[in-house]
Image (cartoon, rainbow, N blue to C red; front, side, top):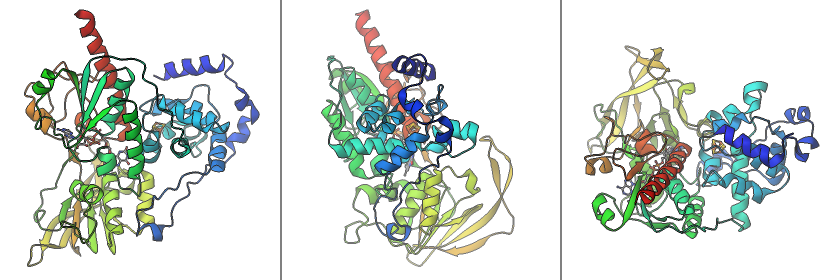
Length: 496
Ligand code: FAD
Ligand code: SF4
C-alpha cells in the first residue's frame, strides 16, 4: 500500500519531490517547532455536562502544526494508518491554507475523517510511525488533530464535497450493520455504482459510534452528518431490521440481492462470572452506555432510567471502561473508580481518554481485581471484595500476567458497578447460517484479502471478524470487502 501511495505522491509532485511548500521553511526550523496542544473544556465544568472535551484546533494552531510536517520522501506515518491516508498530502494542503482540499484528500481513503480524527488510537498507528517519533524521539506531528480540523472545517463550511456517482450497476447488495465497517463498505460499493441498502437492527444508525462512544467524545450530530452524506451518495438505510430474523438470507437472495456484507459487530458483553455479579445495580458496559446514549435512560423522569450511583466502580481498562466511568461521573457519581487488574501502561484505552478521566476526578485502582459483590436487603449491590494483584511472567499477549496476592483482599463500598471486561461477536448471523465457518469464539472466518467467507456471496469484516477492535480497522475491513464483493460480482457477470 505504501508503495502505491509513494508512486502517486511522486507523480503528483514531480520526481525531485521538493515542492514550493517544502522549500519555504527549512527542515531544521520545522523540527524545532513544538507540537500543538489541543484546547480542552475545563475538567470541573465538563464532568457535569456532555460538552465535547476536545474543542478542536483553531486555524492558526492547525497552520502551525502542519508546518512541523517535514513532508518525508518516504512517509512512514502512512504505513501506520490502516486505511493508508495520504498523510503528507492532506497536511501540506493545510499548510497552504487549502483546508477544503485537505478534506478531499482525506476522503480519498477514509469515509469518516471527522470520526477517526477523534477516536483513532493515533499514538499506536500513524503517529507511532511518524518521523518525529521514530528518528527524532520528539512528539509526533498531531496527525489526528489535523485530520479532525480538516474534516470539521469542511462540515462547518457547508461545502462538503459529495462524490458524483457516474457508474450505474443493476446488482443489489445488502450491508448488515451500520457501524464503521458497514458504512465504509457501503460507501465504496455505491461509488462503484451498485444498488446498496444498509440494514440496521437498532432504531439509530452508526453502530458503536452512536450507541457506545458518548457525545462528550464524539458528538452524535457528527456521525449523523456523515450518514446523511452517504445517503446523498445513494445508499439506502433501513432501521429496526434484524437481518436473519426480520428476513432470511434466502428471502433476500430471492429479492435479487447478489452479495451480503456482514458488519454486525461484537456487541455481546463478557462477564467475570464471580459471586454476586447478578445483583441489581450491576450492569454490562454495553447495556449501560446504550441505554444512556440511545434510549433516554439518563433522565430520572424517564420510565426506565439507569441507576444514578453515587459510589460507582467500573471494572476494566479499555475505551469502553473509560466511557462508562466518565458517563457515570456526568450522571452524578461522587466517587468513580476504575478497577483494573493490570498496570496503567498495559491499559488498552487511548492515552488521551485515561488522561481526561483522571482530570475529571476518576480514581484508578490498578493491579486490583474484584472477587465478590454483596447486596443490601433489596438485592442492590452495596459492597465489593477486591484483591491486589502483581505482575508475573508474560502471557500469550506478551504482557506480564497479573497474579493475585494472597491475603490482600479488602472491602470497598459501592452502589453501582459496570462490568467492562471485553465483548464477544454478535451470535445471530453465524447461528442462522449453518454453512458459515466461524471460530470457537464466534468470529466469522474470512479470506484476509477479499473478506469472503465460506459462503461465496457472504463477506464480513470489523468486530464480527476480529472480535472487539477499532473503528479504523473495521473501516479498513469494510473497504477490503467492498473490493472483494466488486471482484466477485464482476467475475460472475463475466462468466454468464
Ligand atoms: P459496530 O460498530 O458494533 O456496528 C455493528 C452494527 O450492526 C450495530 O449497529 C448492530 O446493531 C448491527 N447489527 C448487529 N446484528 C445485526 C443484524 N442481525 N441485523 C442488522 N443489524 C445488526 N474504537 C476506536 O478506534 N477508538 C475508540 O475510542 C473506541 N471507543 C469505543 C468505546 C466503546 C464504548 C465501544 C463499545 C467500542 C469502542 N471502540 C473504539 C471500538 C470500535 O467502536 C469498534 O471496534 C467498531 O465500532 C467496530 O465496528 P463494526 O462496524 O464492526 O461494528
Ligand atoms: Fe491516523 Fe487514524 Fe487518521 Fe489513519 S485514520 S491517519 S490512523 S488518525
